[in-house]
Length: 85
Length: 85
Length: 155
Length: 155
View 1 (cartoon, rainbow over the protein chains, first blue to last red):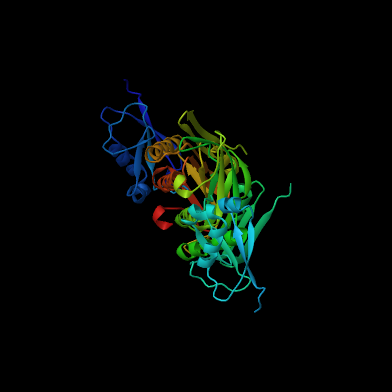
View 2 (tube, one colour):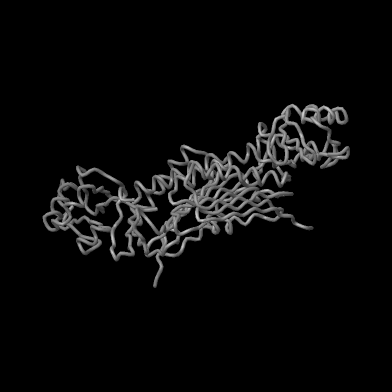
């Protein structure tokens, strides 16, 4: 592993509109968790806070907990309440 | 009312095959019941007996009991177990 | 060969019902389209088709026979019962009569409703009840050469 | 405008599954025909369509957005769960994405099975669960000019 390892964040629906992008790239570091990512995102986009109350998280297309420890090249998604069908 | 009043019997599926006709005409008389019709039919077509064990009856297109008293021009049907769908 | 067909259709502001007994192939797509409505977010189509194997016996074809007038009345009553239990808008039911080949549709039931639970429940209720009380009979022609009027307990 | 489409298809002797997310109109007739099978006596098609009124508010149109890769994975898991609970043969699910007009189909689910109870139960389960866990979002455009990402509790 090297210092340029990254993870990708995918954003949808309200979150995509608030952030203004559907994807963000973050630097990875050893021991990085989704909880930490959430905090970092909230510092940059405080408008996300109400959305984050009912948020679900996914790592590489599977639901996961925010304590999840991440690996380089992981794809993380913050999933607002779904409303398909 | 006169002496030439009749009722019609409709026959379906197995019953139609046993009797060899899909319709029979019977003379009506005051107080005629479906139970009486059944007995008369069984005398002419004893092969109907096993069929009559699980038979349902209808008068003018509505299910009814065999004690039902009939009126002239009634249409009676003997309904073997149904198997639609 | 002349194809006979018996139909009943009713419609008012609360919805519509359509009952059809026919010797022609069932057009389930047309039926499903006919129950669509902007006030409904859900519709369910059930299709009953001629299955090849029943209890290990191979079916070649079926023949359906009905007491037309009464069958339409009984289906009508069932639709009224369904309307009392569930909030459904349009109901369309077609039952095929005469000879049917493997894979052909014997019965199609289409229901639409504002919310999906009503369409599911009503369609299932209608199919279950049609099999119990509507005077329609099925004759099975099997690959072993036998032919039999099917009784419900034999299914 | 380019219409995107994401698909997954699997088939073996026990049956098949087909999952499709598409910006093109849903062809529910083709989907229903694709689950037909001589070993099945029953098939159920569920159609979810754009309804005009929800809680007294008038909808003009909807826009659906999905996390495609994960949505297909999650639907796949749900189909596997349905197969474990019920004896179903073929399952086909299409979810529309992008802008939809009133009356258009947002989702179509087709299931076939030897016996009808399995098709009904599996189709209803799949629709209920898709609404709970599959990452697809609906934006409502209302006649009062407002636009909102719909939350499940607002339905």
